[in-house]
Image 1 (cartoon, rainbow, N blue to C red):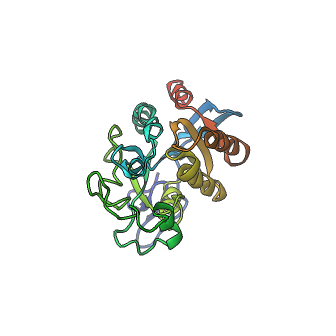
Image 2 (image 1 turned 90 degrees about the vertical axis):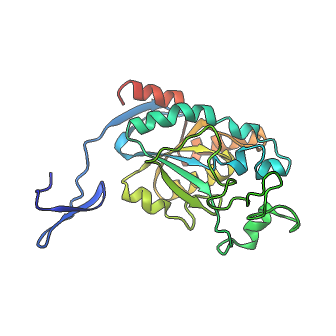
Image 3 (image 1 turned 45 degrees about the vertical axis):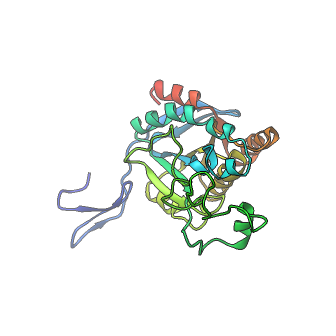
Length: 259
């Protein structure tokens, strides 16, 4: 414990203790809180102090019948499937002092950091409803920060203490502060949830793996509007190359067992 005359600088556990003469840069960490649960390939044990949950793109444009995907004829019913398991999981994680990060696609209104190639994904003819264009159902600008289109879908209620990161690519790490936030918080094991499992969730998970994070895809808390073979390929590749795949009931059982 730092001496009373030293003051903290930083975000725990990445904290210095300082005064005019001293800088204690040992970064004292709390004792581990082990959490064990089964995955598809192995029983794993992680540290609750180093665990964090990333919820990717559970927002109106991807999940709501008045959102962008639905406006171009996509059945968004599968994208709503993670809502119920997340309703059960997220409060339990928060109660265990595991942070929740909402990684939502929320562009600048002027799209100054969005390339033509990225715009083309959302408006391949140039004449449709693309990024920042008004949605047919309610006029909200597509995937624009602070708009209805980019807001968390109904049924999921963020907490005041949750963390928000706007993203502008399929990966939540490109051109965002996500990596810096995770490192400042001392988080090394990442739970992944959201949509689309084979696109934005997978791209973010892959980049996390490349950056050295431990990755766990929560199968029942993730979904996609893509064909079923995309789900199969995603699960195969995560198990084979990028981390682990588990279901939220197994995680909850681990919490019930005391970690």
